[in-house]
Image (tube, rainbow, N blue to C red; front, top):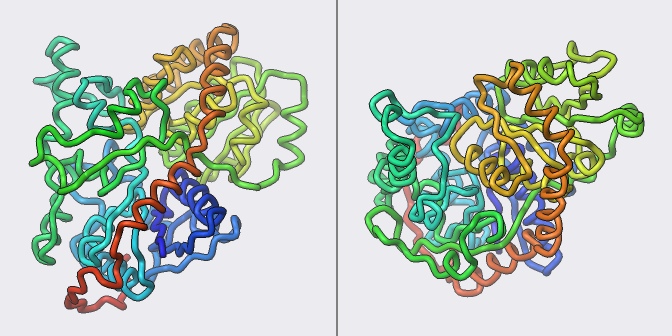
Length: 446
């Protein structure tokens, strides 16, 4: 039995879990899905995925607080969960794994699984590292982020030194790991030695292609830690290819009318972001004279509606992007890949370092433009959008990447990698069975 454990506070992670679930089921694998609840939990049932909620479940307020705490947005001196939550969630997950004979757990940002999988004695597969991967860091490939500027002493260094520091830091700093390591010591399980390790499981699925990431398949699949002290025991990587949302949600009639209206169309889908950023972007796009379609994704943006702006709570991006002239996203890997797979140029406005890397990689391919948050509502944003819509080179380059993506079956390759690992795992049924005290476990944690 395989368990998918998505963090339903994050839209892209919830959609990625659906794609992997479908691929596993298509191969006849028994799969269970569990979550601690969250904003996008309903998308699982909408997609026909039965889900077990562990504990009391997180409401919208706790999810919003979680998103504000993630790397690149929240302080690195916290762990995104309180220590009490970490203890309780690790226990709930480990008990669930044992009760259902789980052989492999799969997650993205449910990082408590780093603890619970060790408690249950099963391997953990992760799919959320994006471009923040050891081979890319070791080669110094990742750009200095616009979303999180270096502190003053470092920002005065030459750009080359800044980049070296940025690529070296993840394996040498324990950012966001403090609480996880405190609770790991209490539970007697392996801790998280670095920020780089926080993003990796026993097997990490590399959800991109060599042509875009810039690292060969052979190098990624054969990678082993250069600094063993920076990673957990047995950490491995495997290329699988792009995995992004393909929800069956229909396109609303009024959005269809905009898409068929004969005007240029810009699609704005900036999820898990401050509402003010979306408003600033829409204001900067109005002078283009294009129709603007906005996926509100949890924000109340109905007041933006007007002659040129159409707002919907949630839209199937993979159906809309092939029909627009430009996409604007925060730069999450799923949204970037959806645009490129559609052959559509995009503007990325990164909120954190991993998004900086995703947009930078697409920009390096000549299919995107990175716009910093600080200028997202200015003439610089308007000018960038106008250029990408006018210069056919951007669309030509996006179409080239689309052909590469079309030859890759990311969900299928991910399923094969998970199945292969499950076949070699003894699983929770015969793995570690350590029991732990769980005072107050049945009480609400929000």
